[in-house]
Structure formats: C-alpha cells, structure tokens
Length: 501
Image (cartoon, rainbow, N blue to C red; front, top):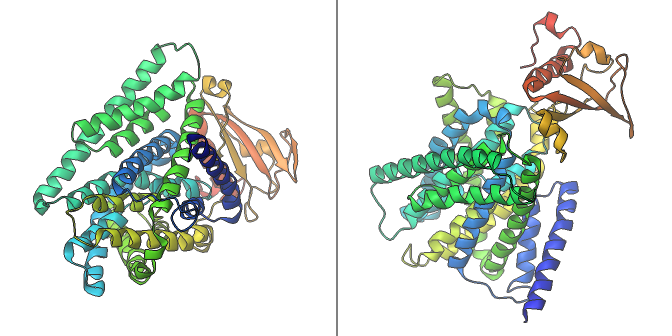
C-alpha cells in the first residue's frame, strides 16, 4: 500500500478512536479495551496487517508511556496529592516488591512456572497503569487524599517495575543485593534529574519571551523529554525523571500553563490510541486460548491476593511511621482500584524482545498478560463507582477543578471549582451568605435544572444544584474545607466541631 493509503487508514483509526472515547465515557467501559479491539481488527485476524516486532513495539511503547506520564505530571494538582506522597511512595516501592513476590509464589506452585518466569510475571503485573487511573479515577467523586494516593502511586510505580522487568529479562540476573542497590541508584538519579530539570525549565520559560504562544506547550513537552533522556543517559530512571519534572512544571506559575496542559493532554490521548492499537496488532488471537486459564488464575492471584496484601502491609508501614492512616474501607478500595492497562503489556514485550530470556515462554507470558489486562480491566474499571459508593467513599459534593483555557484566571492566580450538591447533603436549604466563604472566594453561578443564574446572598442552595466557585489559590483549601463541613453538619458545622477535613 502507498503512503496515502496508510495515512488515510491511520486518520480513520484515530477518528474512530475519538468517537469511541465518547461511547466509553457514557458506558463506563475503559477506552483502552476499545483501542485494543481496533488493533485486533486491523491485525492479522482482521484486515490481515502483519506486525510482530517486539523490539519496535517495546521502544515505541516506552516512548508512549513517557508521554502519558508527562501529561499525568502536568495535570496533577500538587495541592491534592502532597499529603498522599508518603503513602504513594511506600506503595510504589515496598508495595511493588510485595506484589511481585505475592504473584510469583502462587504462580510457581499452582501453574508450575519456573521461578524466573514467575518473578517476571509478578514484576510485569506489579505496576498500576497511569493512563487507566488518570482517565477513570479523575471522573470519580473521591476524597482528595484517596484520589491523590491513586494518582501519585500510578505515576511513581512505573519506574521501579520497569527496572525490575529489565533486570529479570537480562541474560544474567544480578544477586538480590546488587539488584536492590541498582534500583535505589536508578531511582535516585531519576529523581535528581527530574527535580533539577523541572525548576530550571520553569525559570527559563518565565524569562524567555517566545514569539508565538503555541511554542510554549511544545517547549514544556520538550523539557519533559530532556529530563527523561538525561536520566537514561546517566543510567537513571527516565520515567521517574519525566514524571517529577512535569509535576514541577505543571504546578508552577509559568506562561500559558493551561494551554500547555491542554496540549499535553491531546498528545497523551494520541499516544494512548497509537499504543493500544499497536499492542492489539501485536497480539495473535489464535494463540490466546492456551493463555486464558493461566491468565485468569494469575489475574485472580493478582486481584484477590497480591494487590490487597501489598496495600495492607504498606498501610501498616505508613501507620507505624505515623505518616498516614488508612481505614479498612480505603484499603479495600485501593485494593480494587489497582487498574492495569498498557503498562503491563508494554513491559511484557521486554522479555519477548530479549531472545535469550526464558526460552519458549516469553511470547506465552505476553499472551497471558494480554488476557489478564483485558479481562480484569473489563471487570474492575466499570465497577469502581459502585465499589466507591458501597464502601461509603463516594463524595459527589467534593469540589472539582474545571479546565478553563483563559488567561485572566492564570494572571489572578485563581481557581474555578465545580461543586454538585448530592441528595444527602446538608447544603440543601443553606443561603449563599450562610456559607461564610473567605472574602477571596465567591459563588459566581448556579446551574439548576438546566438553567443557569447568578445567585444573590439570599439564594437558597438546593439538591442537585451545581455551584461554580471562583477562589484565589491561597483560599482554595479553606473554601473546600468549609463546604465539606456544611455538607456534613449544616450551616452550624463549626458549633459541632466539624472542620471539613
């Protein structure tokens, strides 16, 4: 086929994928499954396009994951995740190690895999997927701390899992002590590079006046990849470096920050579409039946044993360190919300591309991981809202960010929040002036039964109202605490000792 035909086919797939996102958003079905389905349709069992190059898939997949992590860092609100960082770090390090062992031992005993393959499978499955978490959980009305733990964990745990898979896929694996030292070294170098490039990038963007505003988003993404490539050249973790550099830049006052975030989000969606379609083309449906039963067994071990065990032990560690305290409901939700997506499938291409590793089993491991991701994403993703509600963790009255692509809010250092009043909220019947928000915050608009209006001080809030609140960044936390307090105990919340924390 000529290049024009390939271009038409690619454009058609992207347009179909964009429309599929709309369908997935309405149905609750994770969009990654639809993208994988497109790849299977285009591949050898559909249109017959042959693609079986694990080396190319690995390289393209790692770049796509780097783009997704850059977007995750740029769009993550530091104020929401900063309290969750210690817990997320434990989950992304100690939790990953526990998950690897908790998968490897049962898989070795039940499925008869050798120890190296069992550990490799555990390492491949240990990472929660940033794209899946960012796209699914940001739509859920969760408490900020819990959402922050999941977001930060998914952004941080790619780095140690990639290192573990690389070590287990090498022709000669180092000893446990040497492996741990190497992991610490690579993570340290990645963190240093990321935390150096991020502030330097912000400093440069503030002082260099570019002739066209559209160059700023490109510069931000390029700086993110400076961190990634720089860390890799220094034998550090490129994934950790790009995530931290992007997190710093996304939460700093830099020119055209909203536009940079929007651009990164668009590029990340394109990377996700291309990545999942490519992985779908790489899979061979005719070889999948033999991997179904082992995949389901390994998936059950991951979901019912390894993930909960890593959460429970990690939460006990942070509790003993007096850093954080997770109750049983939060631990249960974190256990169920460990979504897997493209990351495990991309990681499964690493041993497949290394011909000398685990002779005859690398392709089977890839097929097994593919089955696990498809089946358990289909089971876990759509059920997360139900599980959150069942555990009493759904907070529909929680303030949410609205993406506003306008310069005035950036210049005023202000945030625009959206708050929906749920049926059980004691905000119902409260007049606007009784909210007693800080002077630098204002309820600017109410959406009620499809009608919008500017409220007066005497306007009473009703169930299912959506409030738009403009607040300065400095007052954002007090505003959220005050609204939470009134929602729980009413306008006299302060008298009952309710502080909205």
